[in-house]
Image (cartoon, rainbow, N blue to C red):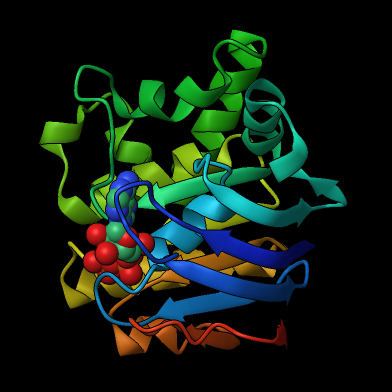
Length: 222
Ligand SMILES: Nc1ncnc2c1ncn2[C@@H]1O[C@H](COP(=O)(O)OP(=O)(O)OP(=O)(O)O)[C@@H](O)[C@H]1O
């Protein structure tokens, strides 16, 4: 469960808050789409939930913990265990193989053999069994994004944040990612996904529309 109470986000260089007075309840297992013009605050909203902003006012309650009240270290640890993010630009590390990229988030924290076995399962699940030893530059964009999803899932997060995950893909690869997201959703994970693509947005049970002018008022229960 995610509960946002009286959230305001201001960037130091901007006069007005970019997100103002947001009150929102996202139930566990929900799939929420974030839509709205460029610059309307979708990425900032995702960063509120992934604890990446230091200038958030209000309560960001994830599974009954207010992450905005935690020290930076504790917040980072909490997010590492519960929340993963997939980005438009894949963000794989070029010097590491597919297998290694997927293993990376757990390397400092768990037994290497166990991580490797989990990574191989995820590689199978995203349909890249034949690409285990390849490097990112040897993969198509769609394949790179599937690796990024596997990497995001290796920590078994309950919440998956996706920032325009199909923005760099053609429609065929977009549809592969949508099918993957459908499978992830069926496993009970909460998905919050920012997109400019109407077809992708419609996959969400709830669509949250961001506007350039502040309109985020009142209580919204998703
Ligand atoms: N670190 C920052 N410092 C100052 N301003 C920022 C910062 N990050 C974002 N902004 C500004 O905040 C506003 C919202 O940005 P944000 O990235 O959240 O929008 P978005 O809806 O995700 O846009 P896009 O669809 O283009 O990704 C924009 O005006 C942006 O320029």
